[in-house]
Length: 191
Image (cartoon, rainbow, N blue to C red; front, side, top):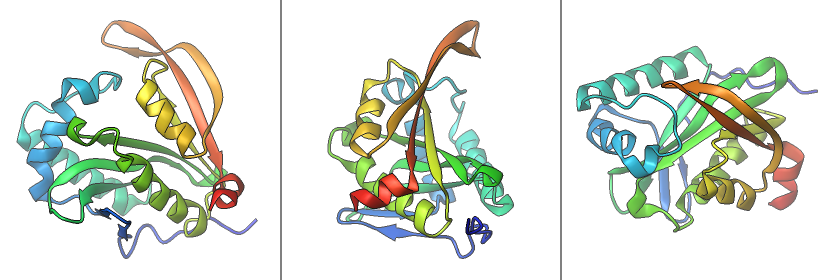
């Protein structure tokens, strides 16, 4: 098998789709990232800490830069071509290079839901994952109650791979998880 690309995201990959510019998170995105990560609607099924301030959101951007520099993950800002404002984020949070696999994650401000934006961004970065990074598969780990995320994954060609009961503990409660996955061959057959 051809080895997984070791470029460690240099130069940083950016993409343009029909409606979107998908590029690097920058310090000026901290306010919108704070809004995204503190939205009750966005975070309803995301069992992670919320930033306490815009300064904490800026720290998240700096941590993302460190992740990119280490080659262990990558995240992009999602923007409409018509505005420089961040409307969402998408990325690979866990790169399992030895298995040619990564975990995808994404968030979008509620104002932009149900417009196909996440699916459009996902198609661009999956193409990069499979045809530049040479990944074999991409997975998504979601809360089973997150029907919106399920719909995005199924529309993008993912299949349900597993259901884990109470495998995730967060703030005194156990949660179930569903794992969805897509193979490079499945993605490329849809193009």
